[in-house]
Length: 279
Length: 183
Picture 1 (spheres, each protein chain N blue to C red):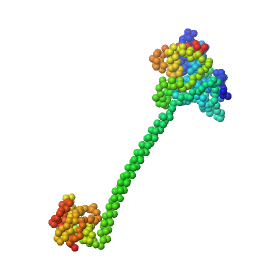
Picture 2: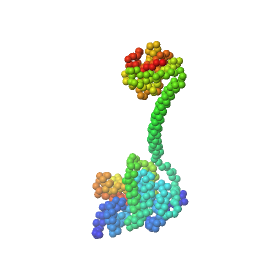
Picture 3: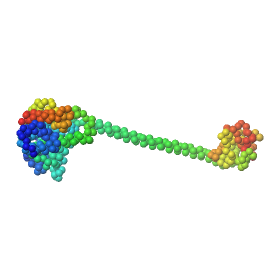
C-alpha cells in the first residue's frame, strides 16, 4: 500500500469518507480501503471511533422505545434455535415515577373491512339474484308450456266427449253422402244427424274430398221439401279435427255439400254440388 | 417495580457473550440497543407494525451473522445500525410495501409518529436536544436525510440539488458539531 504522509492523512479525514463509512454509505472497495487505513493509522482509527460514538449518542438521543410485547416476541424468535422451552418475560422494569400511559392511537381499520365485507356481500347477492331470476324464468316458461299442453288436452277431451256422445246416442242416424259427377270418383262425407236433438255432425276423419283452396270453402246443406237450409261451412284439409258439429236442424230429407266462396253463400250453387245423400 | 431488571453489560462483555452464543447476550443486546435501533427503523419505515417486523428481523440477523462482526471493524452499534437501516430500506423499497402505503402522506406520518410514540428521555442525554438545536438547519437536514431517512449521500445531493462535495462537507461539519457537544 501507498505510504501516506501526515498531510495526506488529514486530507483523507477531511474528505468526509469516514463519516460516510460509519453511515454505511460507501462502496465495498472504499470500505476495504477505510478499514485498511484505520488499521495502519491510529489517527484515522481514533477519528472513526469519535464519529461512531457521536452517531451512537445521536441515535440514543433519537431513540424510540418499542412496544413491550415486542421484547419477548423478538427474543423468542431467536431462541427457537436454542431448542429449549425457555421463554422471556414480557415485563420489564417499570419506571418509578408515576407515568400515565397514553393509549396508543391505533388506526381504525374496522370501517375499511366493514365496507369491503358489504361490497363482497352485495356482489354475492347480485350473483344469487341473477341465478334465481334465471331459474324463475325457466319455471315460468315450463308453466306456460304445461298450461298450453293442458289446454290442448282439455280441448281434445271435450272433442272426444262430443264424438262419444254421437256414437253412443241411438237417435243419431249416419248418412254417407256420395260423389256427384262433379266431384272426383270415391269422394264422400259421413253425416251424423239426430232429428230429436237437432244436431248435425260431420266426420272429418273419414272425409274424402278434394282439398279446397283459400278462396273457397265447402258448405253443408239440408234439403227440406226441396228447399236448402244452410248448415255451415268447413274445410277439407289433412289436419282437420276428428268430428265437426254443424248448425242444427230438426228436419232433413237429404244432405248435400257444395263448393262456395269463402264464408259460404245464402243459397247453394247447384253447379258446384260435390256430394249428396238421401234418407 | 418489576422483579426483572434491564440487563446491561459493557460492550466488551457483550461482544464476548455474543461470540460465545450465550442466551444472556441476546437479552442484554435487546435491552441496551432496541430503542436506539427502533428509533432509526421507525423513522424510515413509519408504519408501526412493519417497523416492529423490521426490528425483529434486525435482531435475528444480528444473532445469525454475528461471526461477521469484529471489534477491529469498529463499534458494535455502528455495525448493528447499518443492518437495521439496510433492512428498513429494503422493506420500504419492496413492492408490497409501496402498494400498501400508496395513500399515506409522509407529512402526516411525521406528526403521527410524534403523537403516537413516547420518545425515551435518557437523563444522561438531557440538554443534547438544545445542543442539536444549535446545528445549522442545512446540517440538521442532511443528518436527517442520511441517518434517518435512509438516503445515500448521492441521493441526498440529487434531492437537495447540491454538489456531492458540499454534501460530504456538510455531513462532516454536522457530525463535528455533534462531537463537540458529546465530548
